[in-house]
Length: 372
Image (cartoon, rainbow, N blue to C red; front, side, top):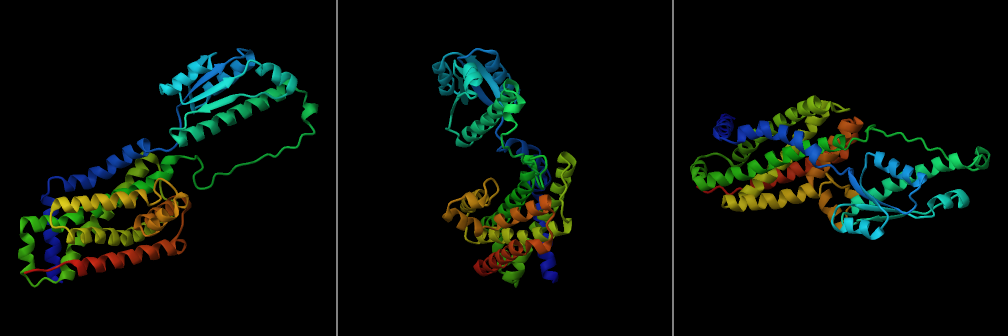
């Protein structure tokens, strides 16, 4: 036990003497939580729209004003030539073109219906699809307004209709930042507690200090444990600091228990730091270790369900996601933060994280080659 104590003390001294790591532990979570939730946002807004108004009437102008008043669209131009509007799309000055025909007013009054054409730039398919949906909703709302104005109430009294009342559970304001903040906390813990341990042993290999340790009676288990414990503590410090920042800046507190989050975080940290040590054991130089870390970190972040639902991925990607510890910890963080799930509700993802922790740490101890 005393041997392990001195090894852990050595690791903390090495970390504290580093000019960058102590500052990164404090500043990195703050900067990420201040910048990323605003910059990485999949909500589609500020869609540039060009309207081709062939009708040039009161009704068409009201439709244009309604679109311009929307928070989702920026009106970049109104013209009477469709080719001019398409030219704006080609020049990236517009994302969507709405063409209003010359017979718009007549069709609404006589036929009780009118057609408009929407041309959306689908290079960015998400923006094109959502922009089209937003615009269609605005047009439908305007159409209902006109029908109410133009036709007597008795003409519509017999029409069947359904009133849908929507209740948004767990994220009442539909704020995307609320959904992403728990995932960003996981991202920070992964980057710091996954990358730094992977560099630790390699640096000692290059400096030659590991040969001195190998000449001592230190067991492989104690050596690996002493490498991991400081990063488990650092991970919990990052988690606590992240809780504080998300509360102070965004007013977001978990709906569930902090104890549930800390217990889950400990299990996750056991696994992700073990993965870092495995990479370090198989790397002879710092460059090799950095390359392997970037390779694995990129895969586990992108295929974790952080940005896109796992269910929307192809089969092979889902298989990778379900073999990824980040997938389960992000799920836990979101469930506890947004739904208030308890430990009993998280049995399956916690069991997966426990399995990863046992597997990675056993591999880390067995793969470390002690040479005197």
